[in-house]
Image (cartoon, rainbow, N blue to C red; front, side, top):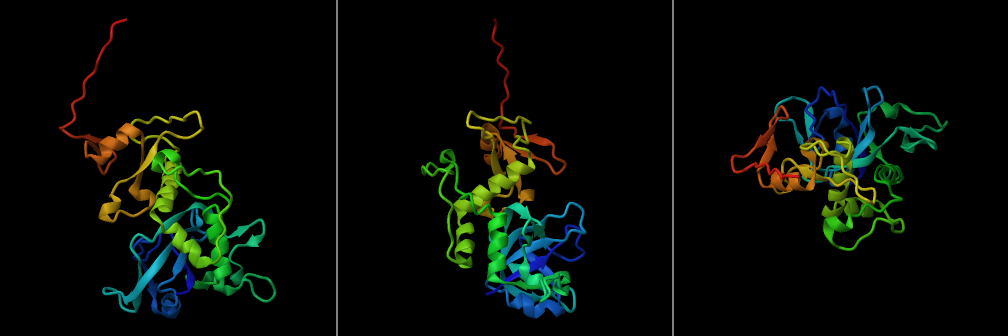
Length: 265
């Protein structure tokens, strides 16, 4: 139940679906097995165009031989455990490497940095987690989203250990809040149906993040499964009155009656 870093490229030749599985050769088997039951962080190297650095975390449920490719294995990701970082974390920051376990005795980057799978110390995991999830800003839902009376302007939340962090970000309330932030940022806080970007008096965007494949149907909390919608559009989308085709055309149900009311001046 250790921590690890899995390198994943957006142009990967492997059968990776970060929210579901990670394919790797047998040379990394022991390292991946050490992460079973624990959490891993996905990293995209700087050689990739528009690389995201450390960009998400997930939990490894089990490891199985790849049923199709000899001498390859699959790390199966625990369903609903994949969570994208609010802020992707660069390999190196103002204080140097964030993954300090990569430094050798002379303080230089060791060859371990080239490993596609490597174990991660709890302190390095905590550091990357805190940077990726804005540890200084408690990630809670808006008052009007949950009706719980929570406010975002609260004292920083302090975790006692790494397991607290994993448990915290795994809660549905926090996951929904993170999902909203990453989806709205991807859409520039603009409704995908109407094209409108409405900002209220408090400086908030009046738009929500909807799951394209619903949570109830195991829809993952990834950007590709999210769409930014205004209130009315979201209501219609959830009820199947509007949808999007594969080529992003707006589809309108036959149950919808559109009428135009003209008022005389």
